[in-house]
Length: 152
Image 1 (cartoon, rainbow, N blue to C red):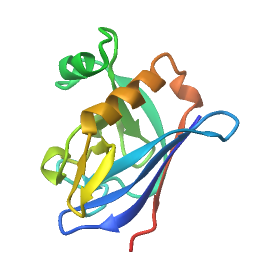
Image 2 (image 1 turned 30 degrees about the vertical axis):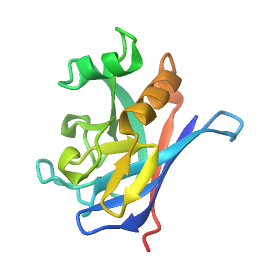
Image 3 (image 1 turned 90 degrees about the horizontal axis):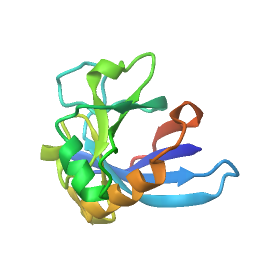
Image 4 (image 1 turned 120 degrees about the vertical axis):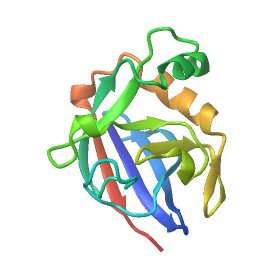
């Protein structure tokens, strides 16, 4: 399984891109929008989006978002997904979750069904529900997340 985030739209306070999930055969099985912080960087605690590159996913139990995730998906065993690699440690806690603007990101990746403006996305909880339902039971060792910047 492969996930791609292609950052396309530069807003004043965020970037918005396409978030795509492909199965083992390379077929597109899910897509939505992703909203991240406007500036990329490696420093923790600075509200920076992670830079383009190749990342891994790991489950992140006991997140403050976990109870809400379980309400959204209807599954009591769901846990948040944490994005990391050799340059961006797991401990930075870059999660994939819901939200509509850069005020909701804190460096994380937000999902949404629609791009409502250059500064916001909509249908975030619905997009997260579909994505997390898709990821339930997936062996994350077999998942690669690729982030590319193709900003206008």
